[in-house]
Structure formats: C-alpha cells, structure tokens
Length: 403
Image 1 (cartoon, rainbow, N blue to C red):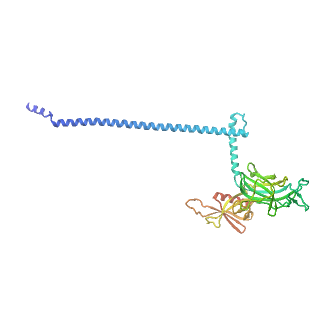
Image 2: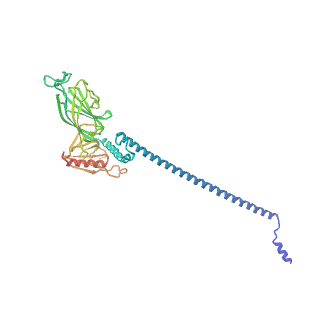
Image 3: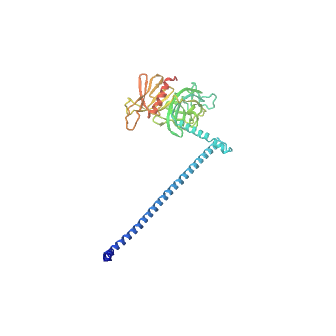
C-alpha cells in the first residue's frame, strides 16, 4: 500500500517557477499561431480581391474593344453608304440615271457606274503616258483673196503676195508644244520650211514629235520671214486635253486669230521676236493632220547608252520608236535625233545578261539591250529588266513589220 501511494505522487507535477515559465511559452505559441492564421486569411483575401479586380479590368477592356470595333464597323458602313450616295448624285448630275427612277434601279446600275468610273480613270492614266505623234502641215488659205477690200495686202506688180507693211509674204509655221495650264513650260518647238505667199500655200510637211502626253497644247504660229524680221500673220491652238486626239488623231481646219497669246521660245528658251502683231486683218485657215501611232509599234523613254556590258554608268538618252524607226536623242526636248535607225536594216535585237555591280542589294542580274544595225552595235539599258523586255519585244516587232 505504501508503494502505490508513492507511484501516484510521481505523476503529480509540482507548480514551480519553471512550470510557470513553460506555460507562458505555450500560451505565446498559441497566440502566435492564431495571429499567423489571421495573416494567412488576410493574405488570401487580398489575393482574391486583386484577382477579382484584374479579371474585372480585363472584362472592361474587352468590352471597350468590342464597343470600339462595333463603332468602327458602323462608321465603315456609313462611309460606304455616303460613297454610294455620292456616286448616285454624280450619276444624276451627269444624266446617267434619271432622278425619277426607283432606288432599286439605281442600286442595280451601281456596278455599271463603277465600271464607267474605272474606265475613265484608266483612260486618264493612259492619257498621261508619253507618246510620239506626227503633225502634218497641209495648207494655209486666205492670204491673197481676190477682190479683197484691203489694198495693202495682196498681189503686187511682180505677182507676189505682199504684207500691209510692203514686205513680201514668205510664210512659215512655228509649232511649239506647251503644258495645258502652263504656257511657260514649253516641251518642243519646231519650224517649218519657208514658202512663197499665195492664196493657197501648200506645205505637205511632216513634223515628228518625239513624245508628249495627252494633256498638252499645240500652238501653231504663222509668221512671214523677211531677213531677221518675223512678221505675225496669225496663231491657232489645239488642246489635246478633253479630246480623243491623243488616241485617234484628227484632221483639223484651224481658224487663226490675229492675237498672239503664246510666244514661242527658241534657242536657249528665249522668247521669239515677232513684229507687226495684229496688222493683218484677214481670216486665215490652217489645215493640219495629227497622227498617232499604235501601241504595238511605238514606245519611248529614257535609256542608258553604255560602251560594254560591264559598264557601270552610261549616258542618258531619250529613245523613241515609231513607224519602224528607232530614234535616239541626247535628251528630252530636242527635235533633232543624233541617231536614226531603220529597224528593217537591223540584223539582231536581243537581251544580254549584264554584270551585277550591287550584289548585296540586287538578286537578279541586270539585262542589256543589244542592237546590231548594219555595221554598228548599240548597247542600251533601261531602269528595269521589265522595261528592257518591252523594248526588245517592240523592236523585234518593228524588224519584221514593213511600214
């Protein structure tokens, strides 16, 4: 019995300072564990809030994007409708579609109108291309009309036509080509042969124009050559813009005016000295013919004339092909070609492979146009291989065609 009582006393923990200290440690650990739980819960709450805000921000951005796309689509549809209305208005103004027709008919003809506008745009692009022409000066009528009431101008005792100032009438024509809306921008200037004055002056002279676009103004100034003097007889103009002359040519009876509107430039772009403007009171008529060339047998543009295939740089030349004749000018604006080749006499025209001097920037080797004409060879190259191919095709066609 005594031993059992001692064993029970061994399991009793005495309250001492050490046990109190241990209990306080456990209490502190318990409090720290509770605080850590609160920290974790707060952290989880913060993370959840941030995720919610991020998701909401993404949803807002997506909604704004959808709204912007919807607005853009609406604006595009509105723009298409406005453009369609503009086409209808233009068509009604031009008289293409009567205004009393129903909208369904207008919509059905919208494709036709688009095709017409596209054709007009294509024609305008074709009009801007530079093409060669031939202007034929046929005759001038009205200088010496019999029974005229103006005695100073008529036939003298020697049977020759005289001007009001007493000088003999030796008419010739100055043809200068300028831009349509810029008289100072002269492209070419030609002078015809001098004839003897009579009631019906015949020239039958052809002037080759080495290339102009379809918007130029051809001005014909009729003068009388008497030594250093150029006496004014009349002037007329043909405006290619707004006409189909650039495509089909024309035979014209040009009424000459007594006023000098456009002064020709000769030499180094110096204005021509003209005397007695407006002194001749006669109705003069100039007969001319403007002839165009077909697309198959005509072409013009700048090319580089080189000495060898390995040449890096050559001389820039203005080249024109028309009616089987290949003309080479020193530059654009000159009326006299320094090389004229009849392609019928050419024995060989082909493309040669040139040397690529810019291997880092060019993948294809440049081509060179080779022409063997009688006893001389020519090496020419354009700005691209495609243009060289066009030149070769047209020159080979000119060799086979008999003009």
